[in-house]
Each structure stands twice: as C-alpha cells, then as structure tokens.
Length: 163
Image (cartoon, rainbow, N blue to C red; front, side, top):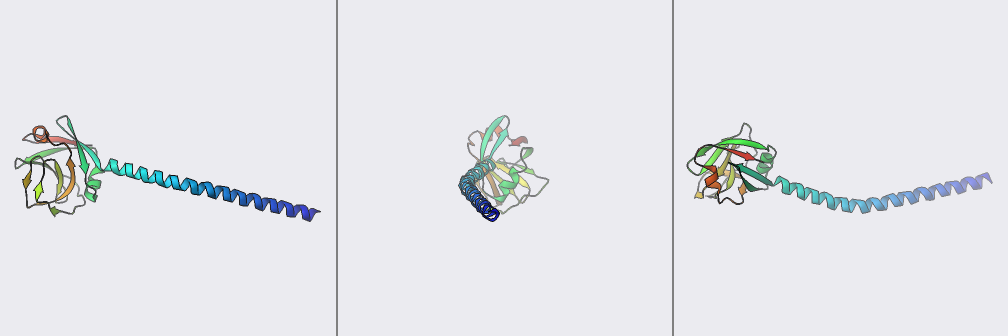
C-alpha cells in the first residue's frame, strides 16, 4: 500500500511539474514575441531621438535631422552643449572641440544652407549659405528649416546651443 501511494504521489508530482513547465514555457514564448516587438519599437524611438537635435541661435530654435553615422552619434552624446562659434568666409560658423569625433570625410561638392559638418576630426561647422567647395567634411546633420538661419546667426561670433 505504501508503495502504491508513493507511486501515485510521484506520478502526481511529475504531472504537476510538467504542467507547470508547459504553462511557463507557453506564456514565456507569448511574452517574448511582444517584448521583442516592444523592444524594437523602443529602439526605433531611441534611434529617432538620437537622430534628432535642436539648435538654438539667438533665441530661435531650429530642428536638426541628424545623419545616421558614428560622427552624429558621438556628437549627440556630448549634448547639451553651447559653443561660441566664430565667423569664417561670410558663409559659415565654426568651433574646434577639445576632443576628436569619429570621422569619414568626403568631398561634399555642394554645401547647403543649414548643413552641420565636421571638418577634420574636431571642428564643428554650421553653414548658412549655399556654395561649392573642394574641401572634405563628415556630415553631422541638416537644419530642417534654415530660411532665417543667416539672419539669426549674424556676421560675428555667436553662441549656439545644441540640445
């Protein structure tokens, strides 16, 4: 009788544990799929946040679309930062960072008003006029609505806040 009772208890325990295992596995796989989707959405949201920036010049905010590259990511990690940018050639403002950023300079050819670029590996440049160039730059981003940029940025040194 004791052996029969022991066998029944062992069988009941095996059934109970196998039932629990199946119940745990099934919800886990159901939870894994939505979690993966949610993680993907969160990653996309984070990527969108990383790839967007605001520039403030003399109180006016400009939205910036960042490039999807290591330079833009490294620059974004420095934010928020305010740089006193110097005037050069009547078409750009520049600032030499204390640190180097990853760069892959290319011959851009045409500079567009609102381009934010890296010259070398530590010089951030904002262009406020369109022109042709033979210099090489690494793209950081583009000010999306640059219509009033030239007026706001002025013709001398200016504090530019990147956020």
